[in-house]
Amino acid sequence: MASIFTRIINGELPCYKIAESQDYFAFLDIAPVERGHTLVIPKKEVDYVFDLDDETYMGLHLFAKRVAHAIEAVVPCERVGMTVLGLEVPHAHVHLVPLVNSTFINFAKDKLNLEPEQMATLASKISAAFV
Image (cartoon, rainbow, N blue to C red; front, side, top):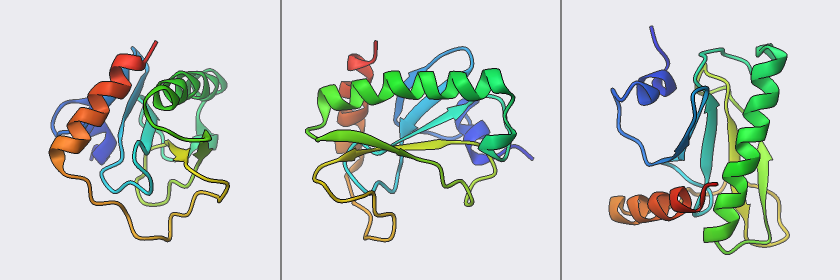
């Protein structure tokens, strides 16, 4: 059975898309820890990020770098942090999280509750800044 991320890539489930290439896809996390929290995934469905072949692994990080620059252009932050957690969805992915102060990314804190319109506007602005 396809992962939830593969279903998003295939258009079976909605998302707030940021960017897409032939091999990678980026979209806003629907339970963000900060405004602009984005997931970046390879289109190739592989459970564990360190099981990706070298080319896909490197491509994922290069694509994520471009997405991070787009987030920085739109979301006021000191920088964008990146982390790999990946236990909840069996599809390799990285989290890009705007760091709004000098604290670390805290996935244990309460998630933000942004309205769909806020998510759509944010996704559109970051997408427009994606180069």
